[in-house]
Length: 392
Image (tube, rainbow, N blue to C red):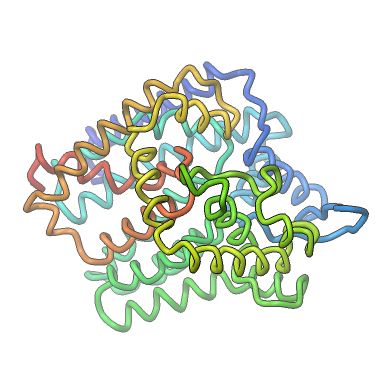
């Protein structure tokens, strides 16, 4: 694939389109999660460690944000300076690499024509283009998950590639905690028992230093982050019961009694909110299905354009791109749905399907703000072209 001039041309096109987003949004100012990532990066540059926050007069460390993307931002700021342009251009490069990897993984499963078509679709995807304009972790997660999958697939022929697959899988988990489950999919892709074991062990070793840091700081076991409780509580609560829409527990006054028992976003808060959510779902066992139903529409672009505008607002980008993002989601989802039922789709190994299912479930059952569709697009793009290429 790397020898194909067409593939390189498509990657270059992806680079130009993503750089254009930075060009047309010069007034971008991180406000939401992107601001939080930047705060962590600044702390890493200035102190060499994660920030410490003060809540109600109590100073406490944090493990809420996974370290992968803050570390990348910190490196970008160290090398390119404190201006936002440097980190945004690094994000453009990361997103472009992700496009290229869509083609590389597709080539290993379906062949050259499908790989080129999938690369083209990813390069032109409005979702992947627009969301590369904000300092969010999803583009980096795409690169790590697809890089790990490519290495795991290569490990079937050359077992030593299982080492890289495991390390990249671990790095993906350190970027988004849902990546921990990715290690199982990578082990399946790698084929034999030995290569599968290497993948899982190297993945665990890659995550281990951060887990040890958390144990030293918090005196408890935290594999990656403490965000699970807050994230789940924002979806599974009485206020979200009718629409499945994620609401920030800190701003929407959900689980007030539980939150009153804790301070900050540490492991105690995470544990209490997680237990509260488990109790809520036990009392409302059909709610996950309702959430999945609502979120499926949001991921597929069926939700009104206002939701696309809301999703862009949560990453500090202007609403002007909302209609084209929605259209891109609808087209990709419709084509991929057809592609799932093609004969060529059956050629994908079980590990690839498991990775796609895990990425889908982590969004479908929790929060479908459309930035979270970015990792899913990397799997939908190859499926979307299969009706036309038939896996050739």
